[in-house]
Length: 149
Image (cartoon, rainbow, N blue to C red; front, side, top):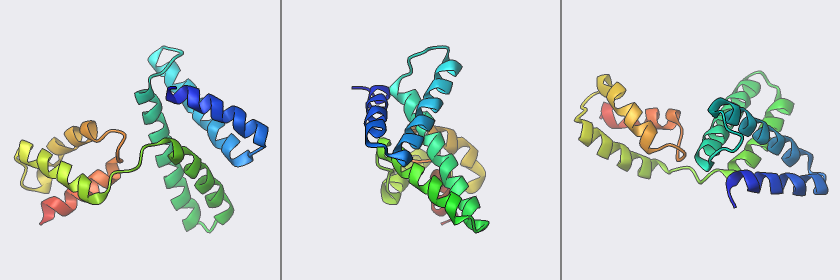
């Protein structure tokens, strides 16, 4: 069962259970899948495209939570947090800092980078290799800690 089929199945279950939070989040996921399908020109999308769409949604939710928290809008932050939990349940577990740094050290050695000035050479390779495992912000922070030392 691919990811899109799993989402459709879970949508039906959420409807039957009248789980509003899960229903709202899964409908947003389906909407993102539909949008991703129109961008690629295909009705059916691959699991990789679906993962990218959900990672983008997770990042948007995290950003919204941060903004709402700063503005003391706990009601909206809670809503976004609930949706984020549902979205993250479909994503693979995020890569730990230690594993991330190991992979980045290999890429740094491969490129021969020695300072933050060369981060432009590393980021594209890291983003491609670590797609679906972590986000760009985590990669950038780990790179800073590795190259500043």
